[in-house]
Each structure stands twice: as C-alpha cells, then as structure tokens.
Length: 170
Image (cartoon, rainbow, N blue to C red):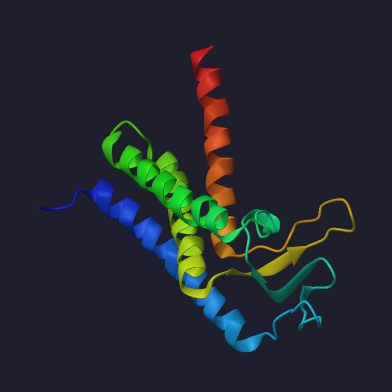
C-alpha cells in the first residue's frame, strides 16, 4: 500500500506537531523548576511580564478543568473520550477528499496536539504546561503548551474558513 501525497501531508503535520510539543516539554521538565502546591517554581521572563515560561503539571484538561474529577471520570473524559474523538477526526480527514490543504493542516494540528497531550496523561499522569501570556490585563491566558497552541491554532483556522465558506455560499 502506497500513501498518497495527501496522506503523507496529514501524517507529516501530525508527527511534526507531536514532536515539537514533546521536545518542548522534555526541555521544560529538564531545565525549569516545577511549581508545586507548596512552593512556587521557577519563572523565566521571555518578554517582560507579558510572556513567561514556567513548569506546571496539569492533571486536568484545558486550564485544569476536570482535575478534581474522580479517577474513573477522569479516565473517561481525559483519555478515552479524546482518543475516540481524535480517531473519528482522523478518519474524517482521511476519507473526505474534498478538504483543502489549509483545512487538512488545521485538523492535523488538532489531532497532533490532542495526541501529544493524551500521551502525556498516559505516560506522566498529567500534562506539562509552561507558557503564560499577560498583556496588562487586556489579554491573559491560562498556562498552556505547544500542543494546546496547535489545537487552538487549528480551531481558529477552521472557524475562519467556515466564515469564508459562508460568504462564498451567500
């Protein structure tokens, strides 16, 4: 079985997304003192107080949501459900030959980011987050990682494309 250029593109984006995320997390775990419930960890200023790196282990989902769930619900909502959804999305993009390259990139980024964070939950029991942005209270993020950035970027691209497609239809 030979892979089409399209399939190679999908696999390439997914693998690249996972690799960038995992390499960044390895570096953070190796070089930045982690935050704990008892002590504040190391904080590295990248751009003043606006862009900071730190090492936080997140046992929940986005912004720590679900970290207080009992172990069974956490397994269902943070491992099993994401794996099933990622599988369906992957199946969808492999089967729908009408998707343009930007849509394929967006979906593949979402899948790669999702797989990277699920991998962390399986291997480490938590996800390593390390970026924090605070633009003087005008815009402030939670602590996130490269996988989260890939998922968010993919979602933004899909939303923008949906607006573009609606304009064309009307």
